[in-house]
Image: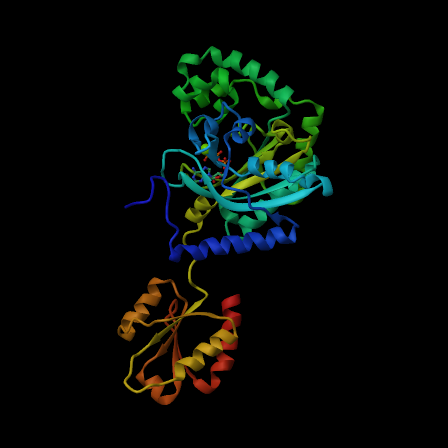
Length: 419
Ligand code: ATP
Ligand code: MG
């Protein structure tokens, strides 16, 4: 039997990368006073219909919904923000604390066509800064996304795009004019966009179709519909980003696939030409809480797609910090190995003891395959004369270290591995 289409097992050799992302994110988020929250994977279908919006792709065609045995309509969450807003309201988290800084990491479900970087069960890491309408909150969350991506060593490979989609009124006026304009070209638009003209014209701005993009070139621009407050909010964010030397590109056509956003919308894209190149999407959502029956609470957040992040980082999460120990099987019992292992443990150095009983040559080959940097070799000569051979696999350099000097050497290795 296979996994269900669009879902994947995360196998033991892949899990280190996941743990490393969790750990890195945790450290940065903890420092910024963000608290983890875990909400159920299933929610009432209504929650997503009301928040994400009935006319969006997610709700319209991508939701995993079913009726449970009590005939309630249940949906596997397609994203995290709506559930968190629901949780903040139903647990009244906003009462004791005007500001809630929250983060989550977990599986999301969308019925999409599976392809590279697009699954039906995928994972997101996300944060929500809830309770502030200040532009500085938008900047805080963007800065944290950049910090996390930088720490995960993606800094040279991404681009931040940002836009303001104004408030509801401004958008309404804009949409009317956009529809008027697009109507003239209705027959030349791509099929998806044709369907969206009257239902969700904003999404057309996002079209990847070249013809449609050309038509959009001379369409009205949302920016020109923004009033003083919206403009001020956006300019303030740009000003802070410039001060922080966070590079950004204003993209007048950037809109998000969810209805609840207002003012700020942003995406972090990788510079590769791959199709699924957006790793992080986010924005401000000041009306979501009211939309689902709560009080007025302004908020801003983002979500990073973990699978896409991993595609990008495939090579960097390797076993370079593990020491591989190749050992020759011998007849008489030699206990030297335990001394070595205890020392490695004492200095908190990860190790893998090869217990395959293969030849030393084959064991070292395995270490190469695992992208290991340092291999300890414990053959017959070594055991007889109380030393080990250390092989640096990237350079091929070999050293012989006496067991008596091993502590000193391992202390030195610890520093090398940390740098
Ligand atoms: P896209 O335009 O790629 O469909 P989206 O706008 O639907 O993205 P969001 O809802 O903003 O995506 O989700 C944030 C991030 O989650 C995306 O940038 C992406 O990295 C990831 N993501 C979204 N859908 C999927 C999916 N089906 N499989 C894997 N990752 C996904
Ligand atoms: Mg999508």
